[in-house]
Length: 148
Image 1: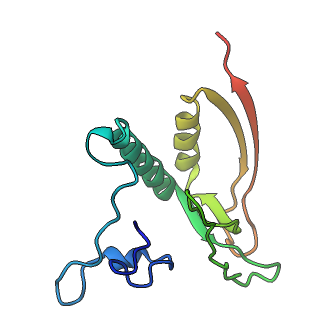
Image 2: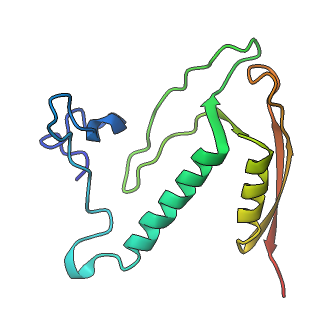
């Protein structure tokens, strides 16, 4: 449905700007619908799923800096954007750099992860001085659900 070339120009290309209003003020391309089904048989958890995804994305963007990977000389490595095909489409593997925006960000992320059923320990060595060279290192250990 979302790859219908009658509705979406260049439907196979990832372009979130397609949904923005056009310069002349008219609406952009329509947002895709249908991923939760239709009518009486639509997913009962669609609002929970949409709101949960929004909360996760907003949290990651508010607390983390996400940048393109850099090579050993500090030059930006342009990722190749490719997607899988099939019933569920997702991006192919690509490398990037994710670093907490501040020490407070680390606290917020740690507090959020401590409320989940899977407890995680995150060891971060933040380096905010030179983002091109000194990257944060992170080691994460996952433990099973807490017994209690």
